[in-house]
Length: 129
Ligand SMILES: [Zn+2]
Ligand SMILES: [Zn+2]
Image 1 (cartoon, helix red, strand yellow):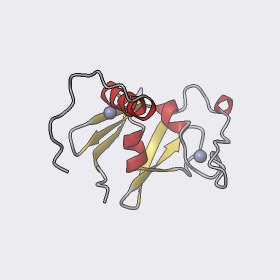
Image 2 (image 1 turned 180 degrees about the vertical axis):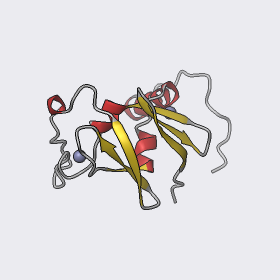
Image 3 (image 1 turned 90 degrees about the horizontal axis):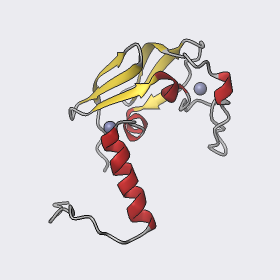
């Protein structure tokens, strides 16, 4: 079973939506970055999973002005372009974390999928799982 990491706090700041996670990780999401990832039926085609939202229709300075918990597993944001229907699950938010640490670990994961040449010297000895 997958452990879902929960946020301790979600702060709507001037330049970013900052999520502080219970494992002390910090995710600074630029407002527009998050708005463009809206998972609602108006922004994503439910059948194909294809994004139908045209980024050109989203204001450059769009911001989240309010937030609303969506059950135990996610959050809805109210955006300055009057959009609010997208439920962002914590799992998706954490997976989309734009910080450098997460960017590097995602790049690593991609590399190990694609090519199998492991030249890095930091392979952990034993994984206790
Ligand atoms: Zn949407
Ligand atoms: Zn991160």
